[in-house]
Length: 297
Image 1: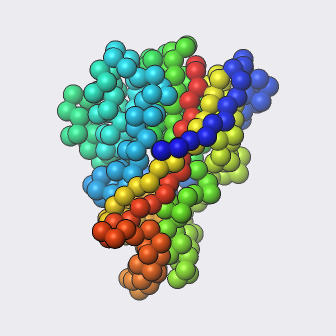
Image 2: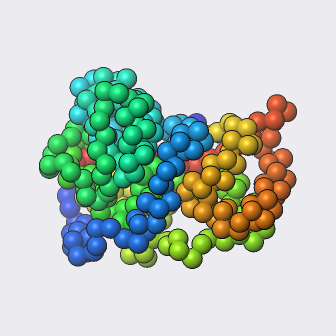
Image 3: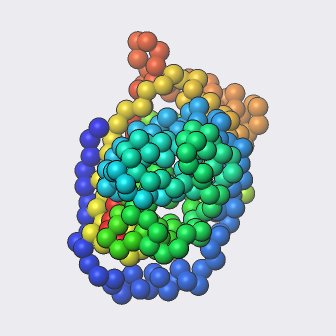
């Protein structure tokens, strides 16, 4: 794994931070983007566990390190998914709490880590008092909220002064492995469904180290730093295809928008594109790049 770093200097809240907070205070907590995300992820815990959860698990140790999670740390895993971060934090001896917006995901974490009872809750409104945790982590969660800055401000709220907040998202533009299925869909004319909204312009931000570090800064976190971890994910072609085929994420909605005929055409294009990544053993070696950012409350 390789990485590069961007950072902001530790500062007190600035005019930009205060202006952002004022904007967040007047914006709706739940957006059309959030509603679409709930639709996308409903019932997807099992296919996610079988496919993309393994991909996202690559950064679990790094995000816990960035949040300084160790024995006795009172930590929240927000967007806990199928429990990979929760389980790893428990293994470190931390006192772990978990939350996810999707009931199926919360249930999956409960099964994976029996000693933890996740809350069903979504950013930017979490059911915890101010200063509850020593650390808060969100592994590939900001991708799935309609108001990322407000989500970070909420994580800051529930974390004690001096505590740590650490998050990961996908970099944009994505690495070739990330864009493989999207390129196959594009090759056969499949496009984003009209019901699937993008983030509102005022809520969006550059998916770059500088962009994510700046987002943490405007959310009020101090000394924000962002690294750019890169790795190769290995899996067989059918497993990689299965996640999107079963409707996971925005790419899953694109892939399913063309019906059976469009799906079959995209699969043929995908098989052709896989030659770029296939090993002699038939596995795919897929380059990925993400962003990992952390700051202090």
